[in-house]
Image (cartoon, rainbow, N blue to C red):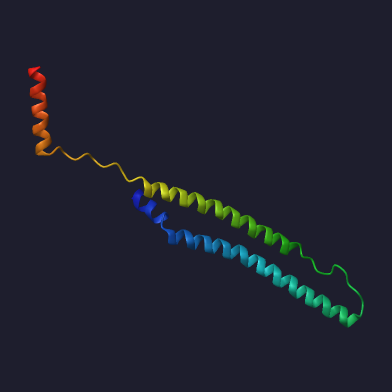
Length: 122
């Protein structure tokens, strides 16, 4: 059961899907903040045109910067995790389980008997 679970975890498709979902969620936050900033900017410009006064700093881009930095940090963390995953996968694939030695053939048995007889004569 543990071997089956390990094989399931080491499937490439599952890792790709997990990375896609995590990056998609982080990127979704960036897009949400970007559209929020864009709408606030358009609204602020419309208000300036209606009132006729100058508004400076009416739009806060802090959440957009925060979401962008979070996306970069999540992306870097996932890069480290996927790099460790691929290294572990290569090690599992490179080292096959040790095989049991094959039983000696009839010729090897006969040669071993001859060797033993020669040792006993000497």
